[in-house]
Amino acid sequence: MRKSEAIITAENFEKIMWRTASSPVNYPDALAEMAAHQARMQAGTGQELIWLLEHPRLYTSGTSARAQDLFNPDALPVYAAGRGGQWTYHGPGQRIAYLMLDLSRPHGDTPPRDLRRFVADLEKWIIATLGTFGIVADVRPGRIGVWTTDPLTGEEAKIAAIGLRVSRWLTTHGVSINLAPRLEDFSGIVPCGIRDYGVTSIQRFKPDVTMAALDSAMKASWHDIFRQAPQNVP
Image (cartoon, rainbow, N blue to C red; front, side, top):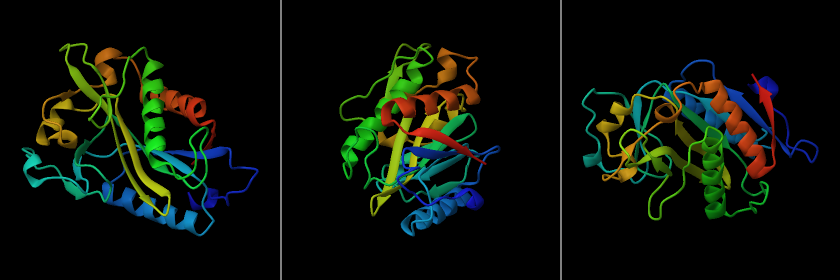
């Protein structure tokens, strides 16, 4: 990736780099790469980047995670994430988008240094992405993430999560959207500290949606919400 780095200039500010991992990325490697890219951005030699990937099966703890909310019957690896929030699960079939962005700059109509507005616009991005596949989703007062009605149970369920870390207005970590993960793995934690609701996936609505189709929808919706054109890099 370092060969593709570029200094942010007025000419390329409206473009944003998108990188897609071809195989699952180990969690410690992802943390190290995010930290390295954030350092490049602080030095003025790294452009804003959205990194699309999957992880092997694992659990991560945010800064508000409670030990009693981890059950982990299959003894999956557990990592401290360094982001906000509580417990979350990652695994194959879940699309993760790590956002390495400079919030001191505007992003579409999102003004600089407005973290609350930025998170709200991330929610809009996810909702618009899901809408591409005819899935109606929204946010719920007092709950983190994006929610919908599970087509199999008829109950409210979480389909996407948001967890960011911000340092000097530079972001790391990001969002996860459940395409077709092992939903039973979520039973090893209390996801995001919310006990009364389950999780669902795009597969339950549209079994034929591929990861490539989801990636395309995420890029198109990002442009619609933030008006930044994708620039793909290896």
